[in-house]
Image (cartoon, rainbow, N blue to C red; front, side, top):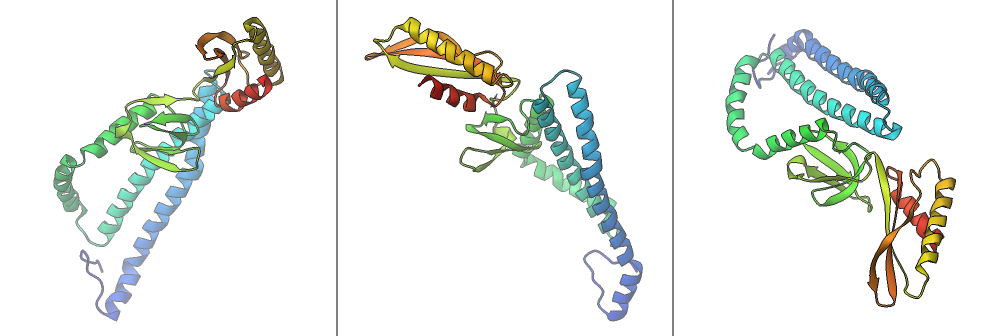
Amino acid sequence: MTLLPFLVPSSLDQWREWLRHDAPNLGTILVVLVVTFIVFHKVVARVLEGAIARAARGRAEDSIAVERRARTFVATINWLFTIFLVFVGIALLLDNLGMNVSALVAGVGIIGLGLGLGAQTLIKDVINGTFILIEDQYRVGDIVTVAGVSGEVVEINPRRTVLRDLDGNIHSIPNSTITIATNRTMGFSRINLDLTVPADQDIRRVRELIDSVGEDLAKERAADVISAPHFVRVTGFKEQAVEVKVMGDVRAGSQWALGGELRQRLL
């Protein structure tokens, strides 16, 4: 027995016939979809992640950057595959229930044309998100500022970027609203401090002290410090005070912790 669209068995005999002929097919489709979903997410995604990691290491990229790129790519592939699997599953289920899927697709195409005119923002989201992913502007785990919001990237897909800020708040940002993306943890980061010292201090002594503390920090945290924080220049004057600039390159994402430790040592 084959069910007509949106028609359910009206008698016990019809239910028995449906359970005998059609229910097993529906069960098989659901099982296949679930198994395919699990296999892709657990096996295929892991293989893809490993292949991306090996390819990136061949170009001598930082291991953390490699991991973030792999996670970002796999998350995007999972998102696209899940959508594809949902559409395939719905089509198979409707076909098994006796609905003319070809006619439905044609009807949906006409409706989709109308909806497309009203879904320009969604289209912009997907186009902009695709370029963000292709150009590798940022990855899962990076600290970024996009659309006026700063935080750690916890998810990227062609439609949206999800950030978690310092307060733990989650921000879901449509990709079409992102015109400028500032990545604070790509490649390397930089300690950039403006310190205020009393105007009566010997500026040469201040310079020697800053450079000495920066060298000590670089030796003790050699794995994190690329170039020792050092005195750069006098940047301005205030009433009874002088402002000086201190800079140094560090491992991506470690600038805040190392900057705080440098301040503490300089005190």
